[in-house]
Amino acid sequence: MGRLHLTAPEFARYAGIKEDDLIRAICNRGDIDGVALPEALNHAPLSVRLWLREDVVLFTHALSRARAGRKYGGRTVKTASRKS
Image 1 (spheres, helix red, strand yellow):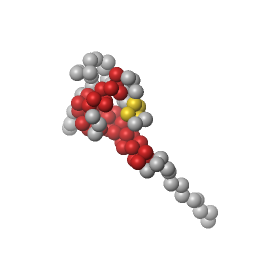
Image 2: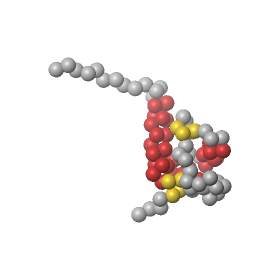
Image 3: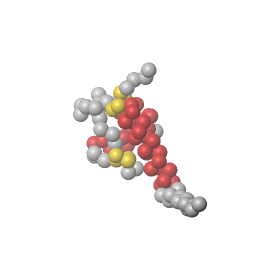
Image 4: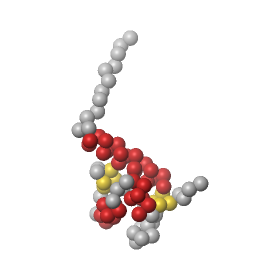
């Protein structure tokens, strides 16, 4: 079983973002590409701040979807419903 918590460098590495961008978003209480950052477990200095692995995984999936939507112009494909 892996660790349940991630530090900021591990968070950035897992999410595929630059550590500087993550730290900047944390300090500005912002988001990355429109996806809100998960809440940290503690509000300690960044060198010892921790996030739940599950929250980081969910954030990474949401970030991937947001980036994919931006890459393809944000269009969603609607399928016509058929009447039987």
